[in-house]
Amino acid sequence: MFGSSGSRVLNVINISYIQSRSKRVWVRKPLGSPMAKSKIFRITPKPVLPEDEKAEIKRLFDNYKNSMKSIRHYFFEQSLKQAESGEVAQMKHRLEDQEHERLMEENRLENEKTAMLREERLKIQAEKTQQNVLASLIKKEGEAKLHKIQIEDFLTKQMSTPFIQAENIEKAIEDALANPVNFNFALDLNGYVYRGKDTSIDTIPEEKRERLNSN
Amino acid sequence: MPFMKGPAPIRRTIEYLDRNKLVLKDRVKIFSINYNTKGENHEGARQFVFWHLPQMQFKNPNIQITTFKNLTPSPFIQCYLENGEEVLMDVDFKSKDEIYERVRRIVCKSEETLKAEDKLDNPANFGSKCQKHCICEVPGQLPCPSLVPLPKSWRGKYKFQKPDEL
Image 1 (cartoon, rainbow over the protein chains, first blue to last red):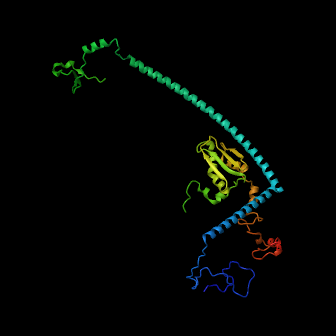
Image 2 (cartoon, rainbow over the protein chains, first blue to last red):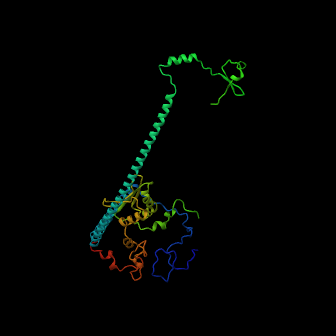
Image 3 (cartoon, each protein chain N blue to C red):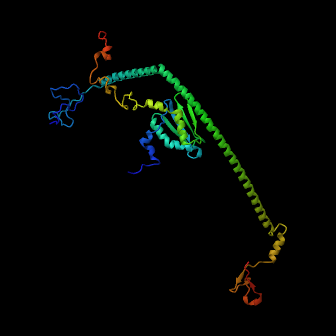
């Protein structure tokens, strides 16, 4: 029923290397085999402990565990200390410290070298930026001058146009009243201009007609 | 099989992570590197972080390794040791390989120490990651006491047992 029953070594957990040649040793039931018929409906009674007993057991257990842990930790520290204080360990420490000092010194020198290189690089960069700034300032100045010249030209042009000042105002009003400007005009298909609102075409002889100038 | 995601995914392979010599010394507790994301003088530091930082953390899982970005104008590495000492390494304008060599020389364990500590190589070490689990596996030594019990005179519990005081 449980296969391989002929062999002597069968699902063993703690096998003894001292062989027994007489009996077949039963160590455990094979893992895939079903539960026995007398046992399938068995319900094991769960062990019931009262609460206060459980609490007492837990308290004792915790105390024990704490003490053992602390003792073990203490012994571990002691053993570490012993390892530290030995001759070999001390020499090792001394060598390590020396090595460390040497390496720190080396590191410091490297840092200084890098710092010097950095200083030079920064100096060159500063020079460059200074020159750039100077060049841009000069350019700005030139541009400002040009701008000024342009503005002056514009102003002179504007000044040359006839403005009406405070002195001329009466004369200008009289002139304007005396000479009313009529903006009405008409165009011919042949390109002749007829000014004025009420001029009729027939009254103007042919020679006196204006030609529309394109200016 | 598709390609692995991300830039240079070889950095995520076990073989790459394992094959480096950046095992920091025991006295180093924190390793921090300051660098910027832009700037020519930070290029070496950036490359070092990109290629070698995962390797370093893989070999030193119990050491804090941090990066600080865009805080200072020049890059540097700072290692904080056990006794409060700080090791400052200026890596301005250095290349990735130069930084690697410098870190290895100053704060990492040397080749000899690594070899001596290497459990697998040395047949004198026994344990889980070594060639043999116990000295009882070596032919010519005592057999395992779980199989063949030791003579009572060799066992501590019988040597030191004082039955009259029990």
